[in-house]
Image 1: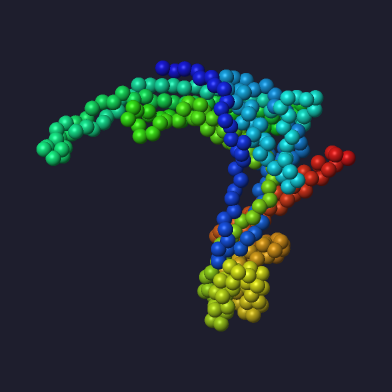
Image 2: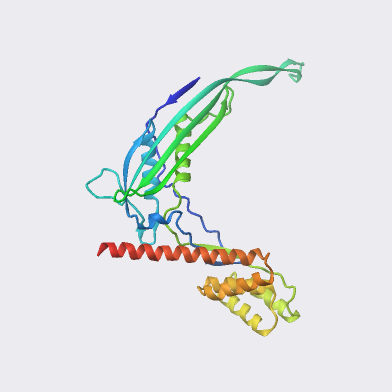
Length: 320
């Protein structure tokens, strides 16, 4: 049996944006900037977004989730978008439209259950047999379409669709009550919107990089100092970084010491020095994944900062 299911939106979680949580520092890590560029640069020059027509039996539910998703984006200067719901005469930079439809299919599903057929005097089971149980296989599916366009020139900023489903066998002897169709539909709808609308606002953050501790290649007197500097990162990162640099100046340095010096430079904002060390490590070993990750991180940070600067300049210029 298949049925089309129409529902009113229940409670929709307001916080939909997925923001990475920073891990606490340990004795072997140092904090560095870790910025995230936007998922779609076209939205860097979009400030106001109006919710247009959302069609389908679940279009209204979709509009609420889209509204919450857009309202969750925050830049360095506050909310990234002004979401217009009632069309109060404000001319938007972009209009969001879409459609959503939830369907439910149910099928009879026979499952086997083992029961005791004979017990002894002590009520210990001597023989078991299988009995059929009449269950239901339920499939909840959602089809979602989203489109953002500029009303000034008709340019399509984002257009995509998603299909999601959840299948579950529900039996009378289940230990807990299954999710309602409304609950499943809300989860599928929110997951669809998260997949369709990328992180549109560039963000600034931090990341803890695990330091390298290999001592091979260091002079014997330097090994003890290097290990002590590693431990010092837990209580005094600046002093530890100064000791890394001193060790490099007093004798030969290995890849671990060079990498840790690059992380120190990256953490204090000297990205040119950090990049120089990472590139040098890569030139010595093209398979150095630690250095490669540092290079990628710096490139990503620079792109994010450039977007943040460009966005701020555009907003400021617009307000004049």
